Length: 123
Image (cartoon, helix red, strand yellow):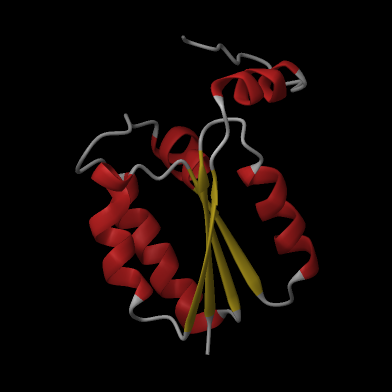
């Protein structure tokens, strides 16, 4: 029996921080980061039918078979990832969703506290 934890929200909302904290404290957990898969592993644009979608789906299936907890975090736009996520959640015994909804001012404030090289804020 595997629990899927989905953490979504805008850029800079705290998704990755929460996901990493959960990954550290939850036994037998797999952390799947949309940014790692899409930008670092595959270097593809965040659009419908991009190659990260089937890879994330395969990672979810693997985690469901091998782990007690699977943590999926990212912006995960509904228009791009929604169909795959809705399909996958039916296979997990439990699903917990977290959505960060922050104002633009709070998002900008949080970005200003980051020590990330190469980050640009586009408004």
